[in-house]
Structures are given as structure tokens and as C-alpha cells.
Image 1 (cartoon, rainbow, N blue to C red):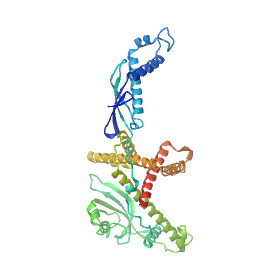
Image 2: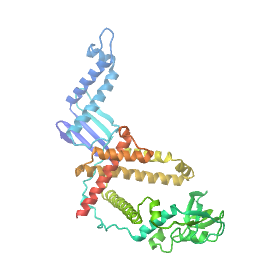
Image 3: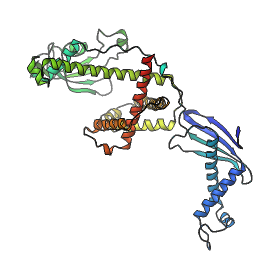
Image 4: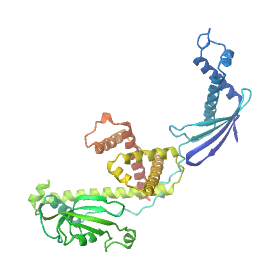
Length: 429
């Protein structure tokens, strides 16, 4: 016990940010609780012949002893808890946590002992941004081959397609359905999807499977890693039995790459089309590079900084994520076909990701706070509008942003700014 101004406090930290607190308070606090409890009781009850609040204390206590005892114990618990927190730098309670208290002993003539159990905010460790080490960024460039491939894909969009009735040969285009048949019942992987019958357009095993077959044929095969795959990729590859249904065989006549084609795709000239494509591909590569770097920081923070997380927050995150999944009709179909073992595995993984989400939220929040990283109201507003636009496909009204979307926008910004700060500090070392 630690004595502080006649209040004795014992703190026991348990898992998942649970605290068990024992407090012993002097008779002066018992008397203060008694006084406040009696005052509240007099406001709540009336006695015949007396105006409300004017009946003698002794008569009220004699008439309502159980109600007084209930109010006294609640007041004693409230006052003692507040006094304990004033004396000790105890962790902040999680929002909405329920404080369970038990009065171990008390009397109106002596001290009182109480026990509390409740949940606190996590104690996040101090973060060293320079502890993150990353390779120096290489200059991001776009090759001629990548630009040519982008133009090739644009040509397909403007191609003339002709259906043919003959066996499939190399460089044809086929539209297929593909089902996985490894489980108890077939699972549709994709429908009405066009593939080019070439080494660049599909996996080697699929190309070998379809060549020589005709429209409406259904072919059974097994997926395999490509010969050019690394040893690690081959080891990690999991073969799947599939059914390939050939819906249509097509030939494509692609437009010439000339000034007319450039204008057709929105450019003033071939030169401008190439420059626009180069800029777009650079932006895409930079965006992917940023995402990859942030992912590395994300993994570094979770691996390096361990701390307890409130169980209630993990549960709330888990419930929210599961509810989101169960609102998706496609997922529901898949979920209903899962075995009990698969459902347990899904929930186990979901719980893991939920806990990681809570951890990274607190780590990011600490980085932003400790290093005084600014987030403006305008940044939050713009992110919230972007979230709403992605959800609805319509231009949102800045005056009607739901609080939940605003909170999500702030959470995303906190995470991004924290990760970017770590990356920036790493680049300086």
C-alpha cells in the first residue's frame, strides 16, 4: 500500500488493460459521502406533513434505511475513486468502460476499503522514429516497354472484335468462366472474362489447356506455377483444380498507332499521348511505392512496439468488421458454404486483424502527439469528402458529413501522417 494524505492505494495491472484498484479512505471521506447521500435522499423522498426536503434527517433515515444505504455506498465509491485518481497518476479510463466496485468494509465511525475493476487506455511505449531502417529509394522511372504496353491495352479498348468458330490457337482471345473445384461444391472465381491466348496474356498451364479446344467446351485442369517463377514462389504456390468453360473465341483487329488514334484517346498528338501516359504511369508507380513504404512502417511499428490493448476495443472492432462482411451478399454466400473449421479460422484471423488495427491506431496517435504533427480541419474535410465520394459515387455536401465518416477521415490521416513522418526521419539518417 502507498500512503498519500491518509488515502491508501494499491494498483494491480491485469491483461488487456484491466485494472484492479484497492482504495482505503479515512473517516472524513465516509462522512462526506454520508452528507451528500442524505442530501440526495431528501430531494427524492417526501414524508406526510412535511414539504419535500424539509423532513427531519432522523425521520427520513428511519423511513428509508435501504435507500440511504444504497445512495451512501454509491457516493462513497464515486468520491473514493475520484480521490484515488487525484492522488495517483492512474491510466485514463477507456471511453464507455463500466467501473465495477465492491465495498470491502466501512462504517460511519471509521475508514472504508473499496475495490474497483475497470478498463483503461493502453500505455503506449515511446517511439523512436529513427529506429526504422529502410533501403534508400531508387529513382522511379517508366520504360519504353511499359509505355508500349499501356498503348497496347488502349488499342484493345478501341479494337474491332470478331467471333470465330474454330479451335483456339495462339494469339486468339477467349472469353471464359473459371470455377474452383477443390471444395465440396464449385466456387466461381470469375465470369465472362477475356484472356489473350499468349505467354503474356495467361498462365502457361491455362494456355496449354485451352489451345485446340472450341467454344462451349468445358475443360478440367490444375493450376501450376510458371517455369520462370522463383524457387520461393514455386514452393509457396498452392495448386488448384479448376473448370474452364470457353464461352467465345475472338480475333481482334487493333487500330494503328497514329495521330488519328492519339486524338481518339483524347490527346492532341502522338507526342502528347506518350507524355501523358508516361506521367500517368509515373504517378501510379509513385503511389504504389508510397503504399509499399507505408506498409513497411506499419509492419515495423507492430513488430517493434508491444503493449496491452483494451479487450472492449478489440471486440468493438471485431464486431464492426464482421458486420461489414455480413452486409456483403457475395460474402454471405461464401460464408454459408464454409465448414465450421473454416468459419473458426476466418474469425481467428479477423480477431487478429482487429487487434492490429487498434494497436496501429494508438501507435499512430502517439507519434502525431509526441512529434506535434499538425492535421488541419481542411485536410480532414477533404479526406471525408473523398471517402463519401468513393462510397456513393456522387458529389457529397460538405455541410452534411456524418460524424462516423469524419472520424474515419481523421483516423486515416493520423495513420498516414505518422507513417510518413517515420519514413521522412528514416530518409534523414
